[in-house]
Image 1: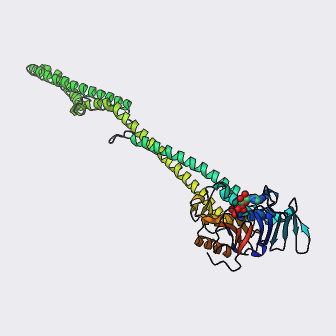
Image 2: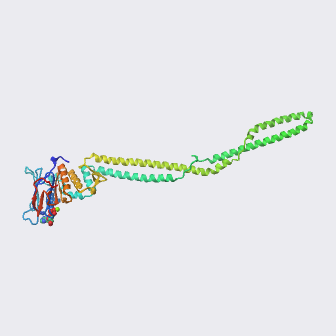
Image 3: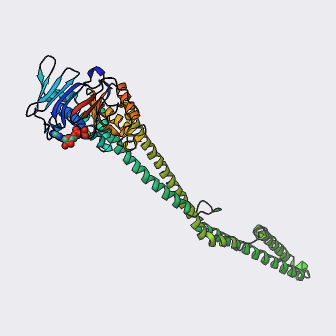
Length: 433
Ligand SMILES: Nc1ncnc2c1ncn2[C@@H]1O[C@H](COP(=O)(O)OP(=O)(O)O)[C@@H](O)[C@H]1O
Ligand SMILES: [Mg+2]
């Protein structure tokens, strides 16, 4: 709240022949509620209309200022506690403002401290939630920055939502893909298997050749033995031939030695290799399936990272808003702006109690022009006396003046108006709340 010294309030009011009013004088309380009571159609609202016209200028001019039954011309006189006296008199209700020194001035001087919202608070209260928030944000000077934050938040939110959808789809697709255990990581090489088979075949050929050679050599030895037997009978004569045959034996034994290693091995029919060859196609299809799944899982992980990043980005933007709102002084404790709407004690406008709406509206009105220390409030019937008392206490606590009307003739009324005149004037401090 502004320095109370700077605030201007209404210190006295005299009306004659204005709208329904014939003659009303009022000295409102400096702080708190001044209640203009009376039954319907007796001139209560006319009093407020007259004040609004006197202080707010032509936009507040009633269509018929002059009381239709009055003989004398309409006169409005409003005294302000900064010493100014504002009057409207004469046929045209022309404005005259005098200060204590007698100097004159015009509407522009009034405009510097009379807040239009204070003269027409219902206009504020009936404006949309966004307009209300906009007024307070403009007053605080953060409307554009907050709008920028809101825009960026929406964009970041949309991006994160898209990322979440993509992540979900990718994860589900990856999970649904087939996967095979007990399969090598790399595809089986057909060429290697063919090479292995060819190598096996050639080794078999070597074995067969070696065995054949041994068999042949053995046959030769047997044949030689036969021959030797025959030749023995002619020993002496054939010694030289026997020696030659011994030499031949030696040669054949060398052949046997040379081939015995290979001949000792067990030949293979290559069936195992042929089986693996036959399965290679299927195995490789599974190897490829595993590789595809791995790639899909990695893509899903990337999307998860992206989602996380966007999530943090959104939180950063929201934190920026919280800090911006925390950095400014709201006109009322518990008042804030969220998503472009006013929030008071956690409630939006339509969920606030009527008394809370009033407190919020009056606070904002005062924040818009802290020099304006008063507010006009028509039709406070919605309040019971205890609510009215609380509102009165709140106004006093904040050094604010409110002049209101209420369909009532009870003790809470400061004055009661009937047929355009004051019939009851409560001079004592209000005790009825
Ligand atoms: N210029 C006028 N002269 C005489 N009566 C008026 C004038 N303007 C409005 N009225 C009458 O005043 C009554 C409403 O006055 P108002 O101040 O609104 O009463 P309240 O607020 O006490 O219900 C209506 O009956 C209306 O016809
Ligand atoms: Mg009224």
